Amino acid sequence: MSIKIENLTKYYGQQAAVNDVSFEINTGEIVGFLGPNGAGKSTTMKMITTYLTPSSGKIYVNELDTEENSLEVRRKIGYLPEQNPLYLDMNVLDYLEFAAELESVPKANMSKAIKKMVDICGLGDVQHKDIGELSKGFKQRVGLAQAMIHEPEVLILDEPTSGLDPNQIIEIRKLIKHLGKEKTLVLSTHILQEVEATCDRVLIINKGEIVADGTPDSLQHKFKGQVEINLILKKDAIDKELVLRAMSSIKNIEKARIFKEDDNTIHFHISGSKGFDAREDIFRKIVSMNMVLLGLHQEETSLEDIFRQLTSSK
Amino acid sequence: MKNILTIFRKELRSYFNSPVAYIVLVVFLIITGWFFTSSLFLSGVVTMRNVFDIIPFIFLFFIPAISMRSFSEEKKSGTIELLLTKPISDLDIVLGKFFAALALTAIALAFTLIYVISLTFLGKIDTGAIIGAYIGLLFMSGIYISIGIFASSLTENQVVAFIISFLIVFALFMLNKVLVFLPTSIASILEYISIDYHFGSIARGVIDSRDIIYYLSGITIFILLTKTSLESRRWS
Image (cartoon, rainbow over all chains, first blue to last red; front, side):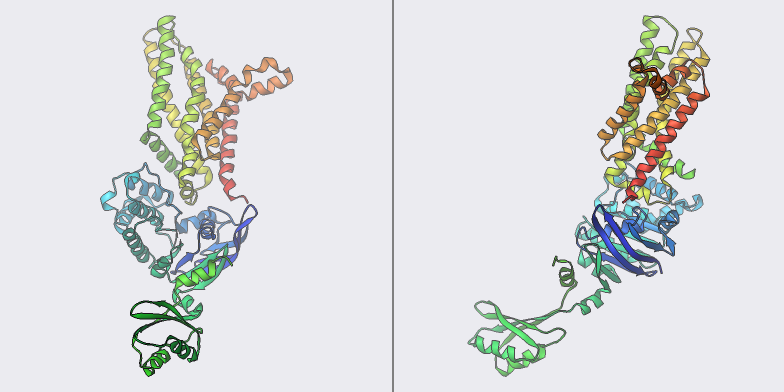
């Protein structure tokens, strides 16, 4: 296993930014830390990368304690901090060389390693430019290249796509997905689509605690709440009351109400109990009453709903 | 050692990538040049004395100005986090930055060798005293720089870093100027702590181990303080 965290706690003054968190990340996994701003994602990452030390608890990266073997751990990790800090006055190649030297990439492999990163991250056209002149998307690529220059086993990316435009986000995600194939990769985000798009596993963090842990699919399954069905009927001479009563009589349907009405259609909102698909019964009922069915749609609980459910202050 | 060199090269390059290095070098040379020529042409004396006397004063501003950005800028832009999560020790980072600032100062001092060379055409110079003065100035800048870097590690605001380091350096520099107001028991201790007191004897060409020990221990203390200040992020 690659990263093991035991009862990790970090206090800033009186406030616990991370509170008694334990989890393990296996080699080769792409794990997303998901949580609202200030949930403790960055703090956890800063402790894994040895920038901060835990108030209590232990972190092991490849069996090495981050406090006792700090330098060894740092060698195994590639890190892209939040906001992607860079030396803006250096040009791309000089900066990558600087990073490679600090990571003790052997002199003989240096130019090869730099060239490889330039190719993988698509920096060929800008390699002689100053970093300060680059667009945000290219800066992000430089940040990624710097983090991977020594081919680390573990890659930790703190909000790798924040502040990018939609095209850049897709490119960076593609790059991350590509890189994640060979490495253990931990990334944090507060954007849900990001996790759905890139991660094998999601840890939802809120107020310093892990509130959910699993694959995006398994979380959706586990947190399936009430089923919501939208039903649209044609409006010619239907008895609304009759429809409502008919719907309520169906097994597992708890509530039916009119949601919207316009010239030609009536929209019904029907909620059923957890994990039950009532669409077939509804369809038959409507047909038996000889009404015109224009739409029938069951809403899946999205990761977004789960996220809201778990992280909204209760 | 290799890591210190890596940091050193990067720092020195970034001095010359920004206007800071050029501005302070030019200002430094204008001021020292004025003092050199005025003593040469007005009083007609073949001496470096005036230049060496004024340099410690110029350094009061010059060195805080070049060392103020060393950590403040990294803190402000967040690159400190990049640096401190690379597999190098905090001490290597501090030393790399220290020697880079020292190198820039040495470059500034090297330009004043032009004055020395031109003097050799005009008369006999006291070579021993001049060599001693240069060694003394280098040690003195070492202390100034270690203070400047320490101040820079305390804040992400360069102006605040400049003011803090100026105040510390100024206090240490002025200590032996206020001795007359103090009882002799304290005076001798304060005199020993004063930077200028030790420079005085080296500038006369006397290289005393006590002065060297003073400078080296001062530099060590402030470098260790800087390292501690970097580590303080881990305290909680």
